[in-house]
Length: 175
Image (cartoon, rainbow, N blue to C red; front, side):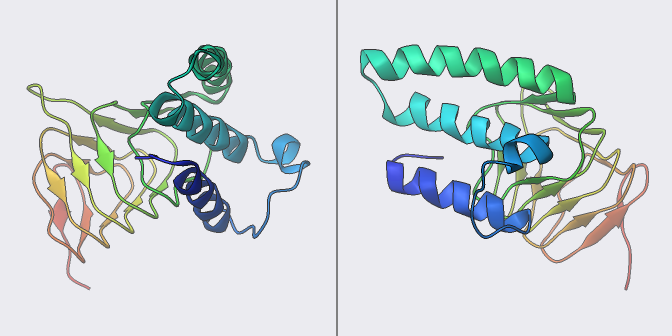
């Protein structure tokens, strides 16, 4: 969660790195709409968590409205303060992430992913996790660090660190 301006800049820098860029350039806002959406997400997280003054709150609501419109165009439904630094949304399309979900650093998410709530609990996902296209993750489960979740996998049980899971329901594979 972003708690200071320095952290905000760190998150932006790590997100850029995950997309393969070293520095923000203005034309990225026109050529990489997913990255622009992520920057808006990080900005509203910063405003919500750090700016408690009137202008900060006013800016938060305006930017949140613009962010939601942008997300509708891209097919995203992403809660605030869910992701650590280094998020990469690989493709636009249906991506739904419940606001109670907690995801660590350096996460890659592909299209048609759903990370949601089940019986009032949301997943906790570790660092360096790859989530393939069409994956569904739900419930109060814990997914460890360095996990790869295959395309169209349905994950509803805990996954320990350094594993590859595929299938419906998701099972660990060897290799």
